[in-house]
Image 1 (tube, rainbow, N blue to C red):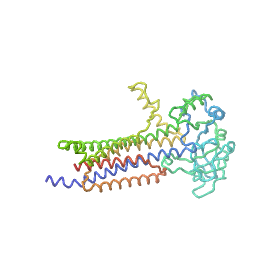
Image 2: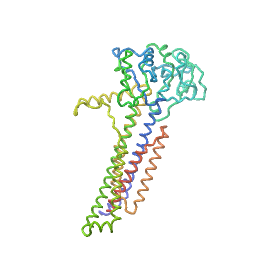
Image 3: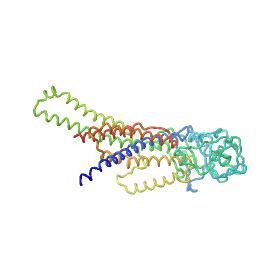
Length: 470
């Protein structure tokens, strides 16, 4: 009865191991592809300056003690004196109702200056966007969602038509297309958006004020000089920097991309461990070979008769050793930790508690109603990248390791298993590419990450096959 009970479980166990292997390869490969795509997406949604910008968004709970609201005069001082040489965009956002004939629709009105498009990617379906020349004109750019609400789903030429906002007529000069990418869809608003000159919004909407500004940066961002420059500029015009949520997007991009480096570093550590195991096995083989020969022969006789075998053994030792050295230079990266995240004392529980509390507050602020469009995208990119890294560590590598541990590779079937690995990796790449295309994300491959997954799988298979042979 005992042999009869154990025999049928072998095929089932082999299928489960292959399934776990395939899932592990899939998760790790898709994680590498998606991680690089998120970095490319971040550089592509912020206009001409990409992530070389810093923003200041007035906190919703900033009371009178946080100084008065930003004014056009203060923006002029910043552009002319304190941020001279840096492109500067600013504006505010209010809710309103857009009217065309008998049709009306709730909208979010963004009052912006003529440089707003340099900090945000806006794909125009028709017409043009606001320029500095439109500063005192009653013109508007509407998005595709609002165009459908007011003018129907048909292909109506809406540029040149007029809509009513705040009881005034605004001429439509352009139509902005929708962002159908993954982050664009998740950050999409329930209502349409219309862009008008900030001067007109402040004139027509009583009680409105400039709530955000964006400035071009020229520094790498790791020294905090961008934030210091903006805080000094705000202080110079009579504003309290503490009343603003300041975000250095150059720094945010480095931190987002650092998660890709961290994922590759951890994958490289796995490969280093496998190479070390291979190195130790090859060294042991040479040691056993020399130990057996030296009992009967001298060194000179060994070199004459067994020189070829000794040379091949040394090559087998040097290859993984050289691979370990090359891999270390491939995966190493400078880890950046913001100064505010480093305690002054080695053990400071109150510091870590405050840091966690501040991070939780920041995460809620990033996804809250006070976030303007660029912040909403940034919050989504952070969240997706964090989950992407977490899933690869918590599920990807454990599934791969468990599958390799349970897999039995027959001595004569090694090539079949290698073919299976190749098929899994190719299918994972195709699926990852398909996911990016379906999600509207940029096609950006992390060659280093994919190579490390390949290396880990095949090295583990080589070691597994060698252990079975022995």
